[in-house]
Image (tube, rainbow, N blue to C red):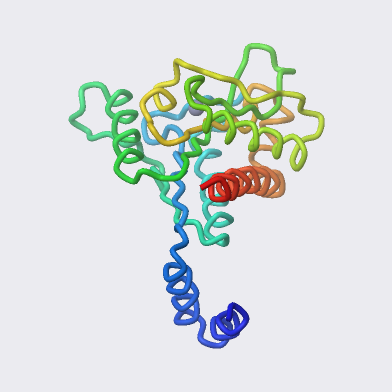
Length: 226
Ligand SMILES: [Zn+2]
């Protein structure tokens, strides 16, 4: 049966894809939904490297690539922003607070299977480097997702990175979202070598491949357990 549907999908193109999703729904299969939160934007540049690379730009480039990979796995993906803007209005007195509240409200409205928030890190010592994933300490599902994404990043993108997923109970987005949420700090803009890598197409592709594999492992695990 699935072979017939796959053949039909190949021949019919868009109409074929519709057949596949209809068949999926008929089998009662859940369509996975993921929110990719694109950190910062607009007046908020986030971290800045010594030579002027802006975190908000790296976040958007990485998020768009991650969206494409997840969509290829039939995951429905929502970006919290798809251009250089924040989630605030010009009239908001505290744009940073409004921005974070609107991100959380969007995630709560969608109620995704999980949320991946994309950021870049920074530290005072320029030699500090390596991706790290954070989760809310009270969320076992968040911890599972963070662990899978962290391990995937180490194995598939940067074997020299020995960081482990870490609980964080102060990040607003982690505290205020019910569905499993992780913050992926893809690397340190304060490390010149890593900052250069983070803007490279090849390295971004490696990063998003690793993140998407971790997310898919999480989604499949949740599905199997259900
Ligand atoms: Zn950030």
